[in-house]
Image (cartoon, rainbow, N blue to C red; front, side):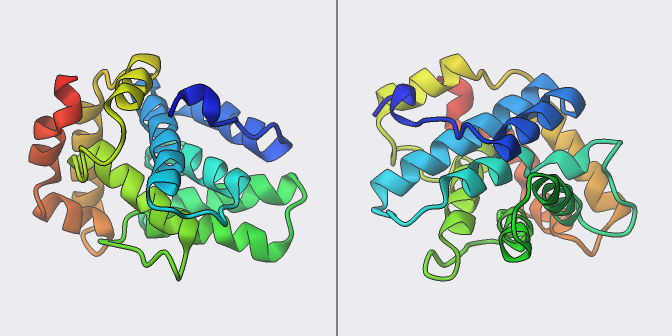
Length: 200
């Protein structure tokens, strides 16, 4: 498995999602988003999930944390809902049908669920599994080591642990009824620092 085996969708929505991420997110958060997409595509292969909407998965992965940035942060709803609505707006402009736009919101929101049933939402399952690896270090040995090293070389972790840790603590303090509070209470700051990917 190589990065070259996973084509980047060449669509208006995919290019727009990356442009938004690069304009508004920090390099560390954008690298996390791109790693999450690559992990998600790799988990699809490892877990035998074949019926994947690759464009939807890419857009959702690239934008899944954009609700944490100042320009898109929402003072009343969770950062995953805020980011999901950014995805809805972007894909509306790209001409997606209403039902498919809703899927962007679903996938981004579900990435913060404790787990997602792949029978319910294949893309939501893949993004939740991917972000669990990149943030908490879940299933660290599930993907080929050479592929993991290649992805980390292409998209280094940089200051992700400190930056995302501070971000989610802030979200939890301001919006304690959201998933950010559960993440913080579940030790996400420690998990970020202890993630095996930090040592590769």
